[in-house]
Amino acid sequence: MVQLIVGKKGKGKTKCLLDKVNTEVKNVLGSVVFLDKNTKHMYELNNKIRLIVVPEFMISNSDEFIGFVSGIISQDHDLQQMYFDGFLNISCLEGKDITDTIEKLEKLSEKFNIDFILSVSMDESELPENVKSKVVISL
Image 1 (cartoon, rainbow, N blue to C red):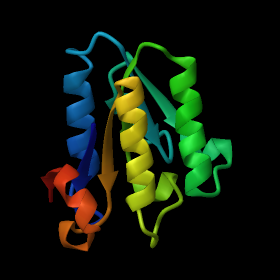
Image 2 (cartoon, one colour; image 1 turned 180 degrees about the horizontal axis):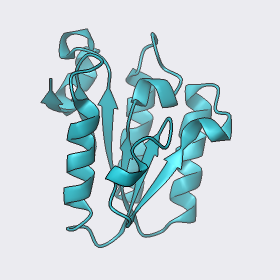
Image 3 (cartoon, rainbow, N blue to C red; image 1 turned 90 degrees about the vertical axis):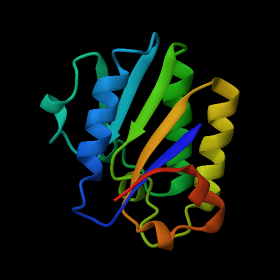
Image 4 (tube, helix red, strand yellow; image 1 turned 60 degrees about the vertical axis):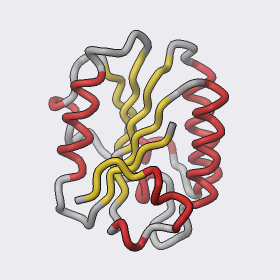
């Protein structure tokens, strides 16, 4: 399943995401990965959560981002959840349509039974219609 935490920049999406990942890691049997644009939140994450700093891997478009996520999935058969902070930034989708990438994540989720939780710096009203149903928190 793909879940979205949406709201304009500075509304508190990262705090919601961090609270959610730190709560969920206690309940999941598999592994949890947190993708971010920097190491700023490293010490706020439970030590059982793997932090990956996406810009270190020179991703330049959304297709490369999906390939990157697929590579992480292929290396960890126990992967249960992935959290993306600053989704538009790390997936190179700022100012672009997110529909196709969200659909690809949904397919990966179904195939490999992984939950994706994304923080998206957009107001709920700005989202494409077909992804509005995935919003779990709107700030």
